[in-house]
Length: 612
Ligand code: MG
Ligand code: MG
Image 1 (cartoon, rainbow, N blue to C red):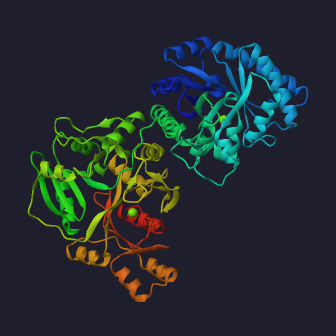
Image 2 (image 1 turned 180 degrees about the vertical axis):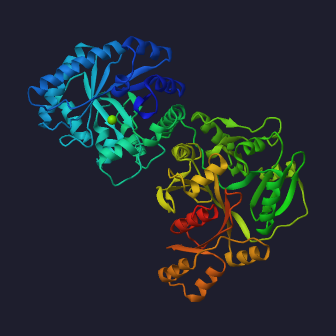
């Protein structure tokens, strides 16, 4: 398939877009008319620039409000098209996309549309140009791809074909099943966009919320199944209007665009271009980058949480702390990846180890998606583990669980300290990420790591809305949640300021007895975030837990939620360095992450940061 991207998808001027699109690996672009109109060069100069970057124009678009007009508007529209054909000839473009009319005087009617399109195709053919007709989802007269196909079929002209646009199809809930009945050679163009499921008029939804495959919730796999049955082999092009992309950086957006097409096309079973890889199984370790002073700070709280220093690295200033199945690493080694990360972000999580029984498969798949492998510092890092660079620039090492113990034993000298036995495993890691980064992170988690995304939800911080989304593997043994916001005075925004970038918001450990754990924490000098009494009054009213249970929760600042599977308990330590805190959770069958308590958590974090 010929991968292409509409110039409208990314930020910048025509020249900078062309450069970014070529650098991302595309050989074709859709020239969006506005980018042409605002360009100050001649068609010849544009053609030269495209040649220099090795780019072809897959389609020139959009041509609007053409079909079903009364005279003299109909003749005017045909004249207007001839002018575009002139320009396309100079630009070396041979496909024009027409979207169905929203003209107030559009008369509608399949036969009328077929006649008009047939005449246009006749004129286009004489100029060596073809026409792709698209059903625009907010056209009052023709908004269903099946009607567009019927008009094309009735016109029966070799220079006239169909444009299928995934957004228009899904936003009107059109059945996908009839796509497979369209002959592939009559589909001249496929435009691909994903989008979150929103209850919104199609025009606003389209103009602001389209995103790349792997960033939204549309059933693009279902679309691809049907498309593959048609034998389609034409331009496969991204057409995305997205507020984040328009204000973001062109190059990474274009790069994400390219990998999103590789991801979408490559995961189809009959293509299987993309190497299959299972999602990682669990967090094997979390690595902190710390200064000497921060090491003291973090060791103190880890000790209070029942962790023990169980190993020191044989040659580096690196410690291993353990409890249950949790491994934490504190890295102070000079000139390491950790210290380089620390110089940019201060106290932070600079790396994770994720268990994966076939790390090489994940790395190979990631390479196909243009996520390069990183091996940290080639001199300092002797462990030989392959890694990918994840959100916030932290490394995600892939550890074969069968080799994990060998790695620890080979690299670390065992210490005699023994941990407590309250905390068992890493339940989830919550991140505060830059708003612009959140869509890129979504694509990474889903395409490279094969994690599943749940729909995003908006949570209230005292100073603005925070968007929160969960990425997890199928048995929920690995979960990252992403918090992002555009509001500048929220706790999330402050945390990102403190990190000078994205970073960890909290790390949640699981326990089987949160009350005993809370008691242990109190006895060992770890205080927890204070939960307001009003919260417990409300809790009692909502869940009918009884005064003594609510009293016990309140005594230990424990939050509560439940679903049909069972109850859920949470508590939070104070924040470290204005960056992150630890959460302790107990889940008795409960499947979620305490979304009902998110506003309270954000408010408590805002208070700790002096924002509320
Ligand atoms: Mg379109
Ligand atoms: Mg949490």
